[in-house]
Length: 261
Image 1 (cartoon, rainbow, N blue to C red):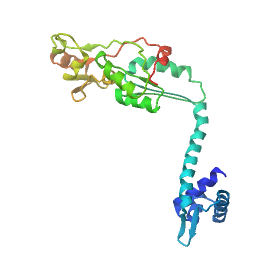
Image 2: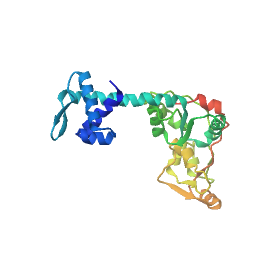
Image 3: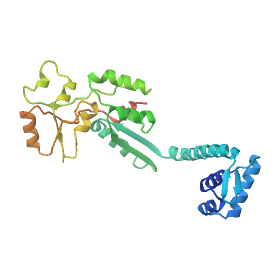
Image 4: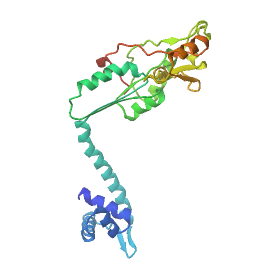
């Protein structure tokens, strides 16, 4: 039994006639009919009932079609194995892009002469990030979170059956005005949710992607500004705050060792 004959049978079932199926398959109707007859002879039962109005599946033919579809689906998956192993793939999803800029750049530089590769680095927040790693759509997930989120993050990794490894504690610079209410008593990142966030525009970098990944920015209270003096005035005279880039000297090898898997 040949794979292409299974495909012929599925096309006949889809089109409802040998004539339409032969046109779609670009083969003659006699050759298509002969191929299906040989298939039915090999199976030991008819797959189709031939009528003047076209063809219909027999009861056994209905079961055959289900199995044929599964076989063809698995065949297509088997044929992609070769391409996957010949092509180097590395997909990173992160909530802290500036931390990974240098490692990702190093990765691309090291493999720039490789004949076939596909690298990507995309942004996301905690829950979607964990889902991507769980589904296997990326090889590495780098999650940014505050101390107050540790319990929640641990619960999520257990839920998704993921292994989490601490990579590095990074420095996050937050700018407030003097006497800002968030600085009263003990400062906690979770307090930032209550105040407007001043984001950068037109500078090629949005700090929202950085600390936004830690779920401490309220997306309903964001002020977008591309003029530096106005940003400084807003932060110095209102309860709005802003963030600078995260600081880290994380190296490529270190980053490669840490992942959600």
